[in-house]
Length: 200
Ligand SMILES: N[C@@H](CCC(=O)N[C@@H](CS)C(=O)NCC(=O)O)C(=O)O
Image (cartoon, rainbow, N blue to C red; front, top):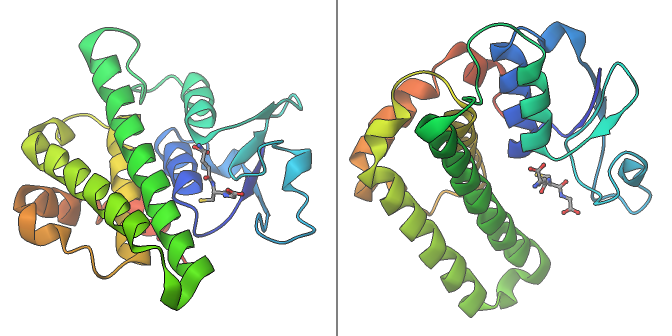
């Protein structure tokens, strides 16, 4: 399998952690893609122009990160990261959606600073901040569900917190979310998280 990737993408990190947890990491060749370069070739593998994209051993192309993770989870016989049915499945998928949504909000916030520098549109930054504060509070309220067996939801929340820490030093979420901070301190020390720390 071939993974189109960027070393700083939290969505790619979800895939890399899933590959490690499912024992498939050695079967994946990493092919870099600079999605922001004007002449990027990522569109040949993902018409949406984003990483990650996975080319399977059969030559099929898969995107986005959640689809790729569920595909990898279908290739092994161990404990599943995508619970098959019931409340556990919907909880894992909802946590994954929460993490993805926080990342999308964080990326918009980052782009606002990168594109507009000193003349950021403060109303956009405020809107993103309000969303992130709400999401952090939601996680803090249900932090207990992050314990237990590994799932795609937990992986996504781990990658989300890692990326927000990597990109921003002004969110201050640990002050208002001590339970989440404790959970993340433990989770971020796990071997798969340590192996996939984002590097510029
Ligand atoms: N929903 C997608 C999001 C992927 C995504 O936003 N990737 C970013 C890198 S972190 C990207 O490639 N952005 C390029 C662009 O938006 O043009 C997924 O889960 O894979």
